[in-house]
Length: 168
Figure 1: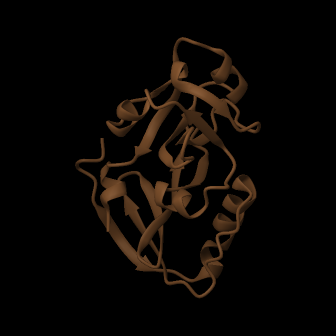
Figure 2 (figure 1 turned 60 degrees about the vertical axis):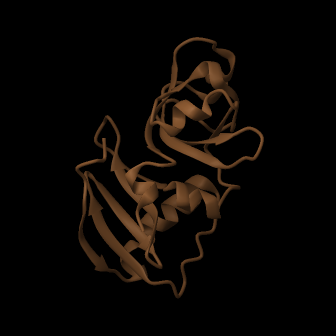
């Protein structure tokens, strides 16, 4: 998917220019990004707009199926904010598939944060260590994913080991 994407138009930005974007993200995920004094940059990466904090890609902006702007942390961002909302937990059987960029099937989903709704961006973590594995679009509500045993639960967008993860 991301193999032909490159970082383009990388430029420094002031906090006041991206403050609404960051505040929306902080509200949605119930976190404090605390980027005061950090070196902030924006760049294009494929169809996404990225925000780099101290040269690390922490936030990206993408569009959903209805062409609505959505802002979410990258996996590196979730490593720093593992208490964030919008998570789905999977068992160890799902991890090898997620690491190859596969969509998450509901058979591997064991728990979900209460606010996860169909169409939300969610982050997938393993049930033992609570570490982020992938990000994607929820196909069903969190409760439905946990109860169901067949079908797709999350359409994967970004995972550990993809080009965005490897980006320095």
